Image (cartoon, rainbow, N blue to C red; front, side):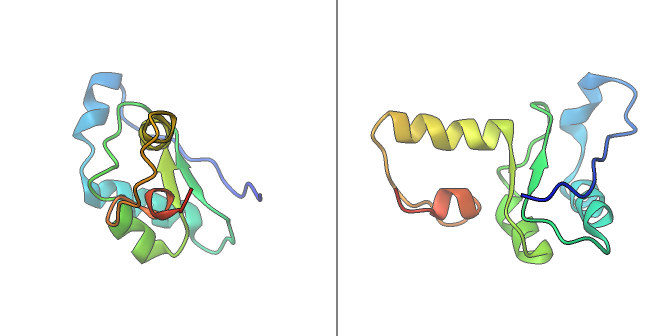
Length: 97
């Protein structure tokens, strides 16, 4: 896996992070990817809400996108024996077990 860039929020306090809208998140990811070839994007913040827009972002940027909460939800389902493919929840949730 190639690590091309790390980005960070300019928000000054953690309580404001859940308020980052989908447009801002998409713009930040596009900025980080601009002119770079990467294998995937990891959004590293448990306060950022990603699940509802991850499939759309992946479609727009062309690489898998996940976050710690997104990956943990997938992993918990697998640990519970649920191997369902869940279209619309991002590429991770579309992987067969």
